[in-house]
Image 1 (tube, one colour):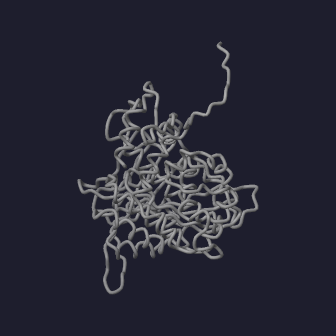
Image 2 (cartoon, one colour):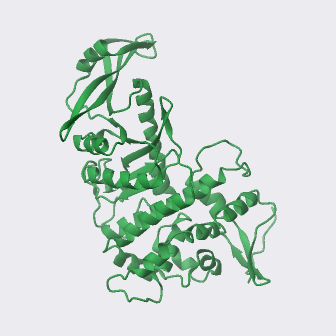
Image 3 (cartoon, rainbow, N blue to C red):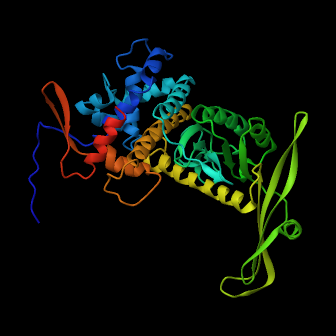
Length: 445
């Protein structure tokens, strides 16, 4: 094996060339001007490091999968970091922490981040893929709570979650099969998933209407089986599939209903599956609205390995929906709701946000909004990269993972050169990601 000689150089070697693409996307927003125009409490009108520079610096960190404030120190003397993100002055770690603490005391920064993120998705004409029910397209909107494990910390708001760990339990709303994040709400760990959800649904519908005119299909799990949610969705003409909470219902009772109203299918010897639906009505103000209660009941008398049961086993699952489609379609559409667990994973693991950096609850809520903004930026880059087959990854996919975007498009090595009154990024011609990097940079310029 050859021995390498390690030497310092004055050449500008860049390890995160993809931040140039992030900078182009940020320049398409009004984020900087809106943040700079808002004066924070106890911060001068014209601080040495502007609000816009603080925000873009932190977004630049998150787009590399780094959430800790101290990581900014690496880039304080990095010419490319400032050039790529159009930053006049990169803040120090204490400045970043203190500014976010101050910004978290007001709701304005969260509102600006939320609105600018949606505007960017709309401005770039991002494709939002529908799902189909009886040949009719619906834009899926998935709402779900995801526990953030912050065990063995003394952070404000850390409480016991339903997963059995100490942490937070924020709620997310994702849109389309691509998984753009529409909305996020920070919550303490012990807060029930239904608390505040009706208002969250109302805000999510308003956000979704800004991005699409197509019919919406909301999907929620059994923790959000509430009449309040049904009423809000029906009043706003949004379709839904909500898994019902069985509460004290018994499988034997549902088996009798299934035998009377359902269709039986024997999938194998000793296993029968009943599918069907029951019409229901719900009172909204002075009128009644029709919805359906879809059910799937499974009866097992023989196990898959041939063991005969002395007592049959029964399982059932039921759903609220207003879709006029066969029961198996409703169940299939709901099962696709599980994809949002991957979106949670990308935010928690790939953006390094599960163990939030601050000890203050409100600040962590603001950091989560920054994380959603960065998540949507990286999602836009990933989806744009799929429009042509010029990447080294030949496996066909409909969604590029955030980890893949960070590893191959953000942390791209290059050399920064100033020549002929132009800044140039020189990437090795043998780098297989050069064509897609060039295309992405030009697409968002």
